[in-house]
Length: 244
Length: 244
DNA sequence: TCACAAAAGATCGTATACAATCGCTGCCGC
DNA sequence: GCGGCAGCGATTGTATACGATCTTTTGTGA
Image 1 (tube, each protein chain N blue to C red):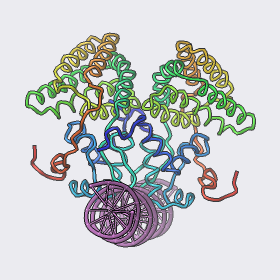
Image 2: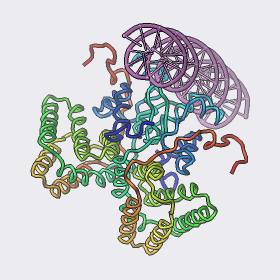
Image 3: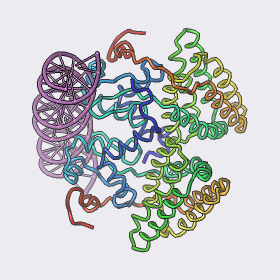
């Protein structure tokens, strides 16, 4: 098999599945960027029209996303962007709190200068997006930062879990976020990179733990109203278009 | 909209998906029971014939299993039962070692007499299956024991992860197991139940950790030969057939 | 005898068509 | 005025047919 195949993680199965399913990837990105909101209907025909694809492939993508808990499929009713319950929201962050600190500790002992540079570039991108007002993109990058750390740790299996949890976190944030000030994260991420630069695994672990607690504390865990707006407005040009 | 619609946690999605996809469930069971072995080809036509279903639904099931890392789909080549690499095997157990001890601790503080009774019945069934020579079934029950503990802990999200990891563990065991003496597990599971009966979370956590370490130590992490035998022999009667 | 190439075979990927089911609107009866 | 019911429209679930790609085999030539 392809044991030591691609450096940086053997999540090949998952990664190739991502690459081979562009519309699933785009839908996930849209969820990350809050271009689609919880509760929004994802009609097969509509999505197929938007991406210029047949229903079959759309169906596959929707089903894959449903498997990750990002959309819910109701029989003969259609697919909807998942609307995590309060309990589910808590669980997602509890799972992250259980996985990510350890990943940060492991990653701190394994990351090289290349990884550090990539992380710093990541933070810079996030900062730039935030400055440009692209809060959605900033949020996506913020999530990807956590995935990157898991990737550095080399545990592709857990990385896949974290990837899923981060995506679901985007939905949770869309539902239960108090304010859209994501400033706090920037500091936390920077501190994390510093700890990793010093190969201080214990510090990285603690920082990550605290970071996740902070995130959870910023959620308002009461029923939050949702705005299931249209769809074409959110998922703009798929095949070739200059938008953005 | 249906705000408080899906109360009770998101485990429903997964559970209903299991129930609504009987052939995926049966394939998973077959993997658990070592009726299908790593590397075995799962032709869509063949599986469809066996279960008397069209290729479409078989495709869905195969894709779902691929998403869980239980089968690998190679473009224009077909689906095969996954053959976890040594590294992947290690990762699966490392992930379990990271998740399950905590789950055991949480479960110890939450389990009631009903849960305890179910766990004990589980162990009894496993023991009976082992005595009856149904090693495959015993292995499946042994895995389900871990899932049950995660279920008791109430964390349905992590439970789903553990369910996946346990299934993949079945593949790992099929590839890298030294001897089929699963006796040791019986003791470990019993001790775990005892600790949970005393609500001793710390003990349960330690026992689970040690149990997983033991399991990992029983693996022979060098390349193991596989026997990709036929298929119809392994997946016996789905609709109506006398086998077994 | 080996290597290479071409054709055949098989399998999956995708699109299309049909059928079943559900939600909704309009109407009727109470 | 309100509740129940039937018909209709819409959407998904499933099966089938076609096309693309890869693997394998076989034949030929050096």
